[in-house]
Structure formats: structure tokens, C-alpha cells
Image 1 (tube, rainbow, N blue to C red):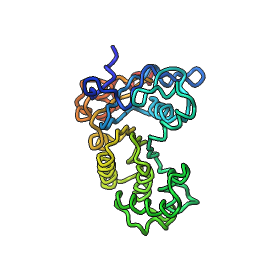
Image 2: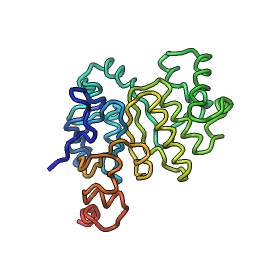
Image 3: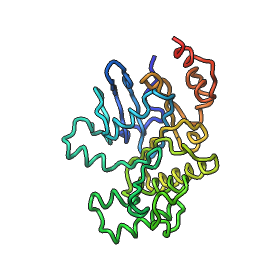
Image 4: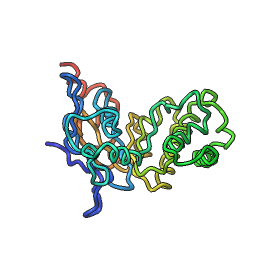
Length: 268
């Protein structure tokens, strides 16, 4: 029996910011997404967990339009992105901010230009204003304006994550996606990044979806959580219940146990 799609029910009559139904994607004979259902109400933060190869990254790429799903519905404020004309679809996806797993900063550009890249690409601001906006955004993630003149290679891993976060919030997006935001960071810096994410999401009034393997990060970021296993959402509920979910697969994953139903499937 499938788990109800909405882990944090939206207010009565309110359309979820993000609504996914029956999302499927295969690569050849391998079905990666097998009917994903997920609701993310406005102003909430959802964390999505799951093992390697479970479909988390493919789900994210489908939402962002990087790959096309085989079937299903992806709605942003009630509008199915997959059914919109290309221009409208691009306009809707411009409302999305993204923090990539490894930052994905452009090595050939200074930090300030990385931060304001989307604003410049869409011609929302001129270069002078872009540099001023970048300084303000860097301040919001705890970095000095002088960092803007540096190249990404001159920054530590934690600083690169902050710059990537500043870029993600630059256009004040309605919904933010975070792909493994604490990967490669020590526990203290991971907590710092999570705190900045929470602060930025609250300040913008945005909705957030984070993919993570880090259970401490999931608890800090999420209001709600969902787990993907074998291409389906097998559990959803409050993020605070991840370590006591009552679901065998979720329990094994969140506690990092070798023995359990997930390992048994791998032995077949």
C-alpha cells in the first residue's frame, strides 16, 4: 500500500507549491522512477532521502527540466510544467533556484559574476548593479564583499558552498532545490550551511526541497521528509520522525544498518 503523497498537508483548499503525480522515467530497460507522487506545500521545506541509484537525482533533473520524464505530472502552483509551451515552461522554471552538490561555480569568472550570473544572463540588471547585488548577497551568506573579486579556486569548500547559495537566492526564487548541500563539509561547516539555508528560505518566504544522505542535515533543514526506494516514495512524514518512522526500509537507512530489507534485495 502506497504512502499518501503529502507529508505536510497544505491548508484546506490551498494548491501545493510543487505537486508531482505518477512521475516515471526509464533508461532502456531500467526503470528509475516508477510512479512518484509528492506534494510540497508553500512555505515548507521538504527533504528527500534514499540510497544511491534510488532515483533522487533523476527526480530532481525531471523537475528542473534537465531530462524529460516518460510520464506524469509536475505542477508548480497548479500549472503542469510538462504541458506548457516552451516559453511559458522556461518562465515558470525561472522561478526556481538551485544549489548544486559541488557548487558548480564557473572557474573562469570571479565570485561576484558567479553570484549574479543568472541576473546577467536574463538581463535583469547591468554589470554595475550586478556587482552591487552580489556584494549584498554575499553578506547574506556571511561573506565579505571583498570575496567577490576572488576566483572560486581561491575559496575553501565551505566558502564555495556559500557562494553557490548566494547565487541560488539571487533572483529571489519561489522554490529552492538543494542537492546534497553538506557533501564534502566537516560537521561544523555542514551545520553552518544548513543554518544559512534555513535563514535564506525563511527570509525569502520560499519553498524548499533538499536531497540529502545526511540525517543531521535533514533534521535541521526539513519540515517534512520523504524516502525514495526502487523508484517510489515508500514513506513520508515529519522530518523529526525520520529516526522513528515505523518503516523498516527507512529505519535501516536512517540508522545506517547493514542488515535489513534493503540489503536483502541487493543479495538477490
